[in-house]
Length: 451
Image (tube, rainbow, N blue to C red; front, side, top):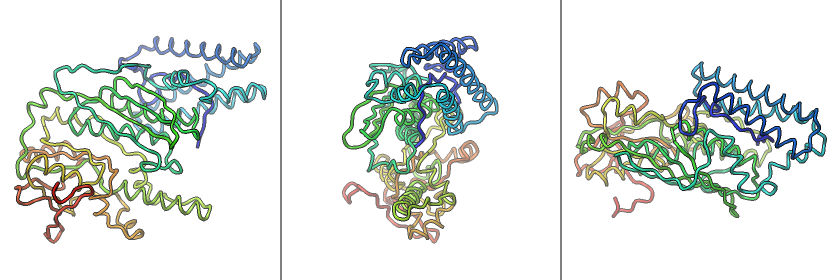
């Protein structure tokens, strides 16, 4: 696990968000320069007082920060001009320059100073309040308390989820930055399914004794990257001790447009069932990771997972289009129902037929699969169709689109797949094979009565 032993007040330009403040207002170059200079002066003074630096050491700290932070800003801006959108690349740049600063410090700090400098990265040394303050300085957000949001005429939508170490993720193979990003996606998807724009995010991190501030910084970096990407206006953070491993609690608030609510049509038979990407991939990716972890534990060899990197990526780092709600409104397509697929397609279909009072037909040969799904299925003796129906953790959107918008939807949303349609209630909820045979859909957690 990579650990960087310096806290940096990352300017709002950090993760592909140059020139944005916590309220998404653009900063002028003069404001950015002022913020940079203020941070460097504050950090130089902090280290001078903390480590009792001599004059020449203070000079080198100031020179190091001025050179490396400005070089990092230039590199990030160049990537933004090139329209690079992959958040991982921005994280890599940040890590690179943070490690350069550490390396420079190591050359002119004494052994005692270096040990004390590392020690300042411990919760036991700085306490909860200072730790939260440092985490905010690493992000494009400012500390807030008592988060609340007043509707501007639309409906307020909330979504929450808790991720537990063990049942929901394994830190043996789950990078903390990816975990933070995925946790945000897990709640923002519920907002998008309701056609709501994200507004506020509340985060509680339950930190176990095996993690310290550097690891929490990695987790927080992933959270704030995702929050900024999806347009959250404010993020509230709290840290709590945990005796049973790491947990991440997320609660998101969003708002739907009043006009959107008025224009949503009642669902009808033949309306289209559409999904935003490959299904079953996350479940299959998890199986690859579990197999690799077992191989490493038994043989001590690093498993080669390159062949299935897309499947692994779908599990570790799911992505959602941040502009999906805006684009739907722009082209005046208003889905009658929306669901966030996290417990398998079968569960989402069951909720759809329950809520609409209609039947649903999904065609097995229309379900999108990630490359390598069927080859891996043979290796593991798993049916990719079963993984799509009941595997879970896909983090995909499912919308019911009026059939009159068929051509427009195909044209404007080419990343979505049309996998079926609504039907008369007596049709039930069925999966149709390529041969035309219909099988009733069964979903975990649904009894005969609830179905």
